[in-house]
Length: 429
Image 1: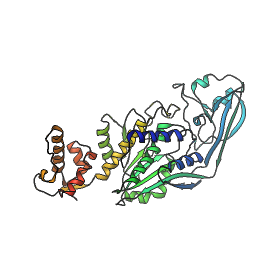
Image 2: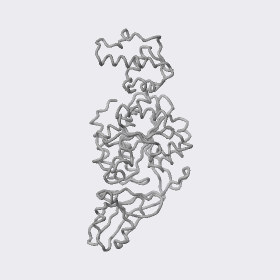
Image 3: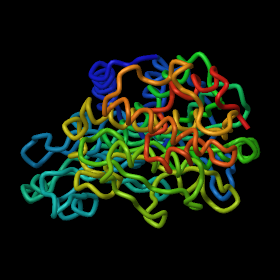
Image 4: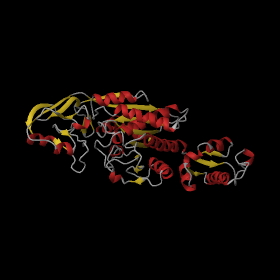
């Protein structure tokens, strides 16, 4: 399937615009509503796991939903409004409706003095409290007096929701794609991951054949991947050959790579190969700088070959976890670039096999229509790449190994390898 670059980027961005206002958390109707919208692009199956379910060392928490929240100042003006920006409320705030003096209210307010124009993202999933987030500029403007505060929320026994899509391939061996859908209105940290993942799922479904089976999951971060692993670990340990956590993949500033705990898996090799050719100056982080669901997938006892490909890595850009991570921070080109990089990594996995040359010495390319009839610098480079590839096709090196040795991207050989096989110059080992 051929995607139109600008068209697909704009399509993904339009979906981000649609999802951005929804208040999501690790449970609740906002997550369900967002997942339902994604299923119009890729057919995820929705699963619900009840409050109180034991998942390794964790327990599924109560479900949280919120309808409204605001602060009214002594003059009767609504100065903080959840309906204007869902970041204004501490996620999982308990309900409250009361009046209190400014001195008391200050104990429930959160702002960023170092970023006075930004609303911070604050959560309290496992400790009951309530609170509001506002800009430091707003906070400095508060005057003494009594304030009305309302958080119309509900915590109750309910469910944690996640989505799963299994895309079958020729092999039962699996590639994992995982992203999260649990943050309120943030564009790069929240929406870029599930959107890019979902459009990759659509692309995978469009392929006539796939070498691998793809396990694609949309979960709430941390607790969601723990829940998912608790229900699927045995199968995933037996089948997973590579995997990627997709997050922070929609801005224009950088490309980033965070390795698996092992650091040398097939997923790591493909990710670094792609980024070296796509964006040679990409940022290479240590596993010690992890912060998303690779923490769970790579943990001792799980040990899946999972790493992360990102644009600007979480916690490295100043807009992170604030209202400045908005729709101006991501772009159609940024989203398409992230999509394209992961797509190329998956193409590397699909093409990666061990091949052996079937002829002694260099093959005669001309009689097979593989040698250019006109010799130019470009055609000479192409011939050199073909012969170099065949020179290392000894049954000991994988396609990725060979591409690294000869300095060409794997996807540049995507059409040549089937042709070599068709001409009986290569056979799979």
